Amino acid sequence: MKLSTIASAALIGLSCQLPSQADAVSPSPTSPTAGTLTPRQADQAWQDAAAKFAPERSAILSRVAGHMDDGPFHADWASLETYRSPGWYDNAKFGIFIHWGVYSVPAFGSEWYPRLMYQKGSTEYLHQIATYGALSAFGYKDFIPLFKAQRFDASTWAALFKAAGARYVVPVAEHHDGFAMYDSKLSQWTAAQMGPHKDIIGLLEKAVRAQGLRFGVSSHRAEHDWFFDGGRHVDSDVNDPRYAGLYGPAEDHLSKDDQKLAEDWTYVSQAWLDDWLARTAELIDDYHPDMIYFDWWIGHPTFRNTLPKMLAYYYNQGAKRDGVVVNYKLGDFPEGAGVLDIERGQLAGIQARHWQTDTSVSDKSWGYVDGDTYKSPTVLIHLLADVVSKNGNLMLNIGPRADGTIPDAERDILLAIGGWLKVNGQAIYDTRPWRVFGEGPTEVASGSFQDIKTKPYTADDFRFTTRPGALYAIELGWPDNAESVIHSIKPSDHAGAVTLLADGRTLKTTQCADGLHIHLPGKPSGEGAYVFRIAMPGIDSSNGNP
Image (cartoon, rainbow, N blue to C red):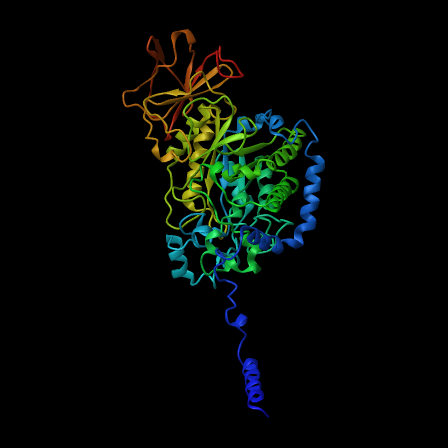
């Protein structure tokens, strides 16, 4: 044998024993992909993971296309701008919002923990690593088996919401984390198939309606397109194609200011928009919500041709009963195409169109977190009075624990509000604004996320509401001098008998040029706000104006 032949044989033998170059550099499935996957490739990985649901998705989209124009609304913004909120909603005034999901298991930071735990250097990231270990071994998916909801009782929840005085209840059907709290036919990552193994939304729908309350759902699915993008920049399970059905495209979120969606250049595929539409229509068809709440990112420009299809489909179904509601934020819709929602904030004056504010009983988070602090019932009653006086509704959020129990602090707050409404509810429910929303020295900070900037109200602050023949003056404190003066009531208003709702007493009054002077008894029981019913026969039933 020649030397060259021997050498060649040796090299062949060696090559059989050593791993190939490709094998030597083969990355782990959890290795960072931010620099290797294009936006289209990331989206395709999600599409591949959800491919088995394509037939059902197509069937739903065909149903929407075939019926979205069946009624007075059409899938264009000009038509949708003719929408008006239904009477049941305008009269309801007070609802309950529920943020409950897998994020209640870590119970740390906020309901955005699923995103922030993958953001290298964040408090949540450091907590996750220290508590649960490497993200490649324990990711968000691994919280799902720990989300058992073993003490969840939909009937007990619904009874509490009724006792709180709420008229509608809106649980989150799917948050940004992509885990559906309902029995979806478009994903296996659902509470019906994993974790609790229960159709949470279905159970709540039945229980809430059994209490005579309206039922809605909240969808935050739109933001899921990019919610887990931090996981692509670190060694984590977000990069593993096996879990793309849960983590979604995890596109880089190309935005410097979430309030300026026109400057958000995040990649959104048509497949993602189609899936969003199908999932929303699935909620509409399977749970028949009276109301749908959307978070802000549906205002991203890429949704503008898809939203009208969903709205027309839903509004036309609502037209066959007594109307439905869609909440939107910022400039997500043209004015009038839905009901504007102000997150954790208020507006400065009476609004021509009905609107809503949503806030949480807790200060730090919408979902349950350990060590959270809570607003007082008085603060929330004052907020309710202010919002209703300006033609709005308050939707108040709670965050249950992972086991399905509602914290005592949250329960006590709801019952305190319910106790106040049981006595004073006629000044809230079914009312309309007066010619002015209120009077007094305390001004609210207008806009979203401004709630902590409003100063405490005083006994000189009033908020007004009306029913036919009556003005309700809600005093946001009890004066020390045994007299309340309402400067907005003039002699020409011909104010009649004044009744203090807290105890039913008729009070003596003196009408002066500077306003109506009400002579007070000793302070009645109750806290927060005190309501005077003032007979005023000239008040119109439609808008509160004489």
